[in-house]
Image (cartoon, rainbow, N blue to C red; front, side):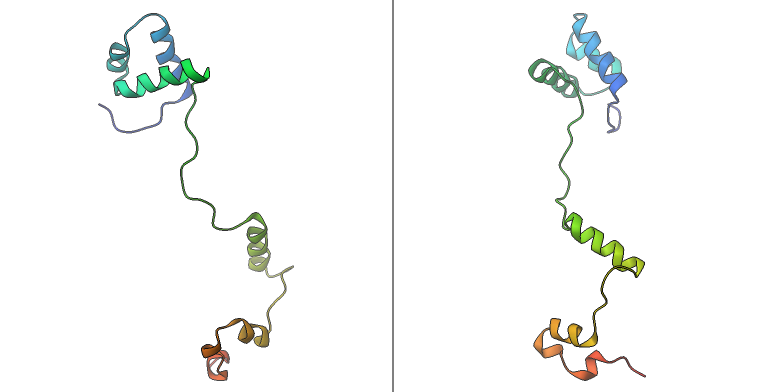
Length: 107
């Protein structure tokens, strides 16, 4: 068996074409050097949905919203995003970290 890689659309069409010609799934899998389960899944997908494309999805769910993304970009540019004052920062910090020594930079 070959290493893991995605099957491109051209190869997928060739695989489906061979099966439609009447070839066995195991023979097609052996010819393309891929697991028969991959070929079988492609054929089953074509029969049930009428399409034979890659599965998308998976992956991690977004942790920021599009609005937060825009704010991050604006704040990185340094324009458009309001700057916080020391008072606002101290107000947003937890109570135990509001001491003036922790808020002011060392000079």
